[in-house]
Image (cartoon, rainbow, N blue to C red; front, side, top):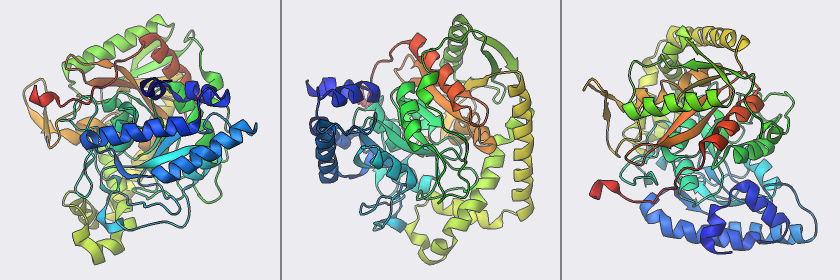
Length: 475
């Protein structure tokens, strides 16, 4: 099979071929390493490429599969990890000069589970420094670029994770999400990003941004691949005190169904404006869901309008708790964008943090009331398409220029506050060829229903053209 054909296989298809020994993991791994070498000068998605480590793991996987010891759908499959995830014996930087030489002596649980499932690690992926931002413009390792237009951001903080999946320089990756950092880069790069329920996936061995908001989850090409990856990484971990003991189903059994008798709440009033093409795409997505049999109701969740403020008031003091010692001893090693955010947390009153946590309880209650009568909530993902690298402001239809970041967390941060599962699924491309997406959220620990709706939408939507890795600004 030619390299381009190998790189177009999703996890489910590749796994079938590896198990049937129609392809070897070594052959697939070499194809991906060659693709990384070819794309990195334009993309900068990786901080560390683990070529020799990957080749050894691929060779071991081939030997096991040949001997009939197949471990499951990720056996021999190439994956990548956001460089917040500890990897024993492999550099783990957090995207910061502060940890530029950190080589952990243990693995994050999420990598332990993927490794034990036979996955092959291609490398550690670039990100916004310490996951504290939404652009992936990293001052220490360089900006990650969007494969659909390399003059634009891929989103953040898991920008490298999403860009690599979209660019076919990785097959499935791990991201982290505190205010939207799995879903937003997936949306801007045209791939699928799943934020599981808080506690569904262990945070052990993953550098923290906010202890009570951080989620770990898959970024993949398809909804099925996200379900397959969640099957591997979900489940209780005694090393994480916030890890849930809730039973983990086989998420793939929810796929392939229709949407008859599914009732969906449509939430769009968290912003008073959208980029016109985003609004058009969202309306088309709603019509597609309705055509699949879903019943749609417009709803409002008033407390969700506080989501951006609440996530900021919770995340920054918790971030300070993690970083305070380094901030006092190594402040110059922080980037100019992240250091003021951590320092500013020092003057946030304790009562503001407490009130923000109380607001979260209200958000959970109001969302639960909506979901008492609905199976899921659907929203736009981002109010605009991907901005240019270095662009601080975006233009509203009124002509007013507004800060970029609040427009991109308006629909995501609230679901971090509530801890509900939420997925970003591409809905199409803009006239400029930039990805647009919708978000589907559900009840706590009901990822199966979220995946069912996302899968039905994805199948009905049809394929989206892959990126060309061109800089469109020079045309």
